Length: 253
Image 1: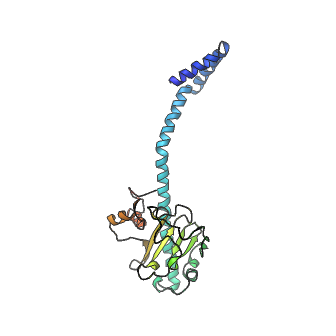
Image 2: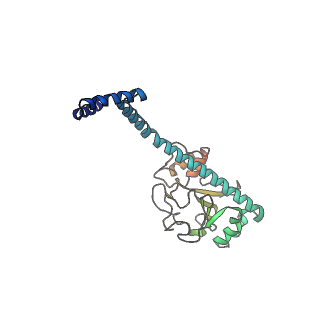
Image 3: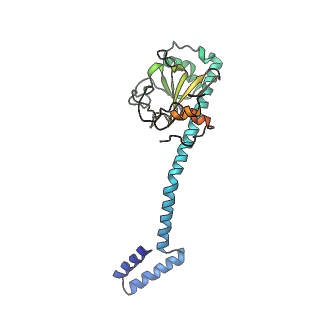
């Protein structure tokens, strides 16, 4: 209010006589028409600005969470439908021919039953300029799973933009990459980071389904991995355990 008084005084400094009187009459008419003085309008706008600054970040975070939840849930449902349809014609997934090349494998068992827009057969083919540094852990480091083409993995992108990284071969006995599926809910768009837009699924023969990697782990184990300083392998399971909703304390970056 003091600022408005000073402004008004300054205006009076270079207005005099009829001009000042006309200005005062105009301001009076504005107040009668709108019901507010200029000072009151500015104060109101300031309050609105403060409220917006406090609420907009929360709204953006809520929107981001909802987007991740919806896309992750859809991706898991989609891949299970694809497998079921393929098994109807090709038998149980465990009996599929792993001697085929990755492209042959996908063309026989997956693409006929999915709305595939592109098979990623080499570096740069799906928007990744450097396949040796694609995915990061939550902690920002690159690690064991950063190269999407190792161990017979061949990524493919569906028409909705979701990318699946499918492995058909085991590594040297240490890890069963054939049962692990990586999904990137927004394709090659950043951040390409575990727990943010990239998640791990696994084939569970006893459940006859594709479910989040880490199923059966305790809450402590899930949260020890799915945190800002962790790897992010179990984040999809942490979300599933919470009814497919991102839980409080989730490391949303």
